[in-house]
Image 1 (cartoon, helix red, strand yellow):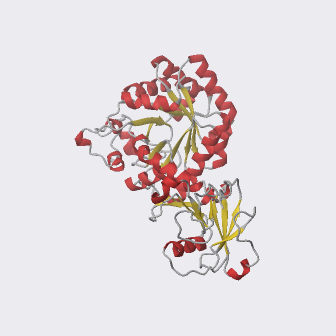
Image 2 (cartoon, rainbow, N blue to C red):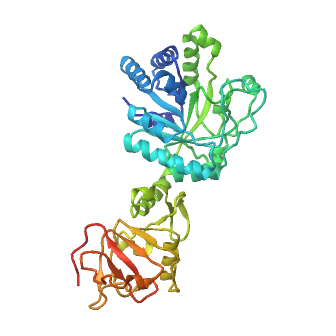
Image 3 (cartoon, rainbow, N blue to C red):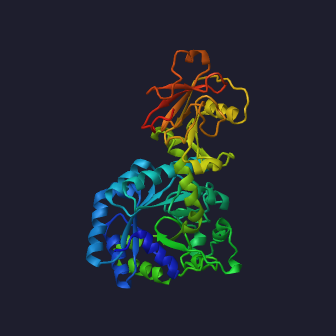
Length: 441
């Protein structure tokens, strides 16, 4: 049995679509599974939050697994339009193959932060699960609208790039002109989609013969042209014939009630983020290194920046975490997390400027440190007199009144907290919190 990632990769290589159908009753699930089996193609079945509540989350998994074993085909299960991390975790624990995490109604920065947390939460439970994120807004409801809803917001290419890099989603669903429900123009097949966003997101020129892996997936949520002409757009180079056949067979296998309700066959844009991920993976390694300096609760909401000020991951908390500076990478991990006061302290130290704290600040270096002088803030190597120390994982406490530090040991090998850089504007308390290297007096 192939994992969903392999199914989508194979579809990308063959330039075909993978059908996605939502179900809230057994007849729809069995019709799609039977059609997929007869056509010898994989299919993804989806259940939204409300459909999961109706069916039961474990019951939905059991039904899909039963049909998977019976048919011997790739019948995969998606937790469609999941709006909370709690619901995403439930789906991961239950054994879903994919989660569509939808925070698209929120501002982009909040969407990125929340989706990132959902990705981390889901994959910590089930590493193989795929997570799709949504950028832009496509409305709600499955009825036929007289006109396009006013709150539809299309996705900008730069938003998509920022979203993928900031969240590490496996799949991206941008808003390209489709909506929840249907429009009369969609039924007539005259609705136009902004599908050239693919090339604008990736920064590629379709006229230069560059081919991009794209998976077009059918679901019962987003309105699209009934003849699938959108997916035949030249820039996509994807073929819908076999998936259309599933659609026709599903329709023929539905009950009279299901025919009356008629699942709208819809084009959802799932972009494989593989081309974007190549650079994003290096970026994520840098982000992980930066966050390794902080305790989990701080890391969860921290912003991550490079030392040049480039934001690598937006956050909502008081701390900003930085990776090891490029100039010091050969020496080892020196990532740190600072609050506002800690950032001002670091800037003053690095630029040899005066400094006085207005409030107590705690700086985190829980991934350790490669070593520094306990007496000279600018020493680059140990000498016989500069008390070189390798503190291991530690925190630093900066106080407004350095006189309060009198009486605290300045001996870095005393076995407890000690004062570093006494007599300078950058004096602070070092608090070792982990195993330290052996003393080098």
